[in-house]
Length: 253
Length: 253
DNA sequence: CGGTACATTGAGAAATTTCAAAGTTGGTGG
DNA sequence: CCACCAACTTTGAAATTTCTCAATGTACCG
Image (tube, rainbow over all chains, first blue to last red; front, top):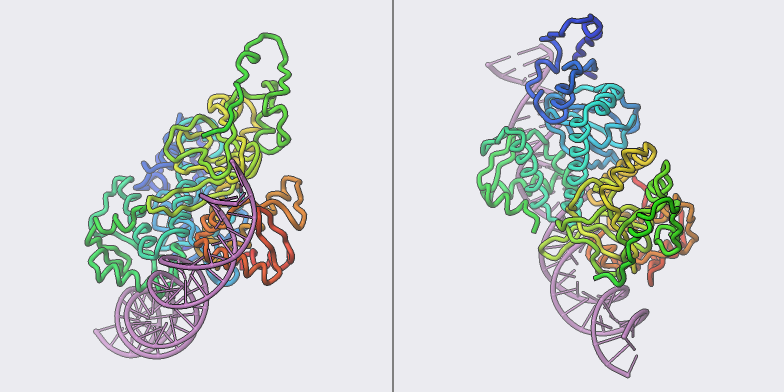
C-alpha cells in the first residue's frame, strides 16, 4: 500500500554527543519544515531537531487511514494533498477537510489513538505518523508548541462551523466558490501566494463529496463558472479569471 | 436584555478563614452541579466549591451573546436550552449546536475572548460567564479538569463532523430524526433517560435552522413523521411513538 | 378578547438528483 | 508510437426534493 518506507534513525539518536546531521531524514530535507506544527515541533528547546517516526508514501486516490483502525501516531501530510472524510455504508461520503502539505490531518485528534474519520490521498502523498508519546512529551515541555496546537485545534473547529454554514445555507455555486477561495487563502497564508493559476488536484467527485453535491451537478456548476468567466477548474489546476466575482460568490451573504 | 442579575459574592470570598455557605449562590443550589464541566470545576483539589461569576437569566428567543462582542468569560447554560448559531447578513442563519442545561456553550472556545458565533436562548435561560482567569487557573492546577476539557472539546469537534455529514449527505427526514435522537441520547447520557415523551422546546424555525431546511419544509417533515406514527413534535414536547423506526431513520446508512 | 408569533396547507417554481449515454484524458503495455 | 483501458468529465432529459409565496389556522400572553 505504501511505495517506500524510510528506515528509522534510532541508531544515530543513541550515539552520545553527536549532533545528528541526517541528509536522508525526511524532516531534514523537507521544504515545509518551517510550516506550522512541524516547525514548532522540531525547533523546540533543545530536543533533537528531528523525530524518529515512520515515513511513508502512497499513490493518489488510495486510503491512508480507515476510520476505527488503531492509529500509529499523529498523522501529518508531508507532501501532496489528502482529504479527511467519512464513508457511509450506502456508498456516499462526506469530505470533512482538505489537508495541504505540511498540515496535521486533524489537530483536534492529536491525542486520540483512533479516529472516527478516514483519510485518503488526493495526489501522491508522503506522510508520517509522529509517535504519540514524543509529540505529547514535547508539548508538555514546549509551551509555544502547546499554544500552537490549541490555536490550530480552535481554527479547525471554526472551520468546521464555517463548512456547516456552507452546507446548511448556501447554494451549489457558493459552496464551490467557497471551497476554491478557502484553499487559495490557505496557500496565501503560508506565503505561497497563488498566481491566477495554481494546483487544484481534487476530482469532480471529490469536490462533490466536499460540498454535498452530486458529481453531475458539480460538473454543471464548474461549467457555469467557466462559461461566466469566473474560474476554470480543469486538469488538476484552477485558473482564476475573475477574482472579484469569485470572492463575491464565496463571501457570506 | 437580562431579566435579573444576581449579586456577585466577592464580599464573602474575601472574608478570611470563613468557609462560605451560600444558599443563594447559584452554583450552590444548582441541581446540575454534578454535571460535566461544572462538577469538575467546582469539586477540584481544595479550591473553593463555588466561583465568583456573573449569573443572569433571560427570556426565551432572546440573544445571549452576539458574534464578535468581547466575551465576559466562559459561557455556561445553567438552566434551560440555548443554541449556538451563525447569523448571515441575508437573514438566514445556521444553528451550530443545541446547548442543554449544565453544558458549556462551546468547549473549544473556552480560551477565546471573542467568539465567531452568536448564542440565543431557546427557553427561559439562566446562564453564567465564568471568569477566564479562574477557569484557566483551575485547569492548570487540576489535571482531571483539564483532561475533561480536552475530552469535551474533542467530542464537540466530532459532533461538528457528524452534523457536516448530516447536512451534506442526508435527506430532510433523516436530518430531523438525527436531531431528535441526538438530543434524546444526550439526555440518556446524563442519566435523565427520557420517557417516550420529553421536552423539545425548539420551534420549527429553529429546527429548520439546525437542519438547513426551510420552516415550511420542516413542518411538512414533522407532519410526515406524525402521520407515519414515528414521533410527534408539538408544543415544546416530543412523543416518540416508534423508537425503532426513528433510530433507523436517524442511523447513518 | 385581541394580538402576535407560530404552525399548517396549497400550488407552482427552482435547485438538485438520477439515470443513461457519449466524450476525454492519461497511463500502460505491446 | 500507438492502441487500449480505466477513470474521469460532459451532456441531455426526466424525476425528485426542497423552496418560495401566500393565505389560513392555532396557541399563548397580557
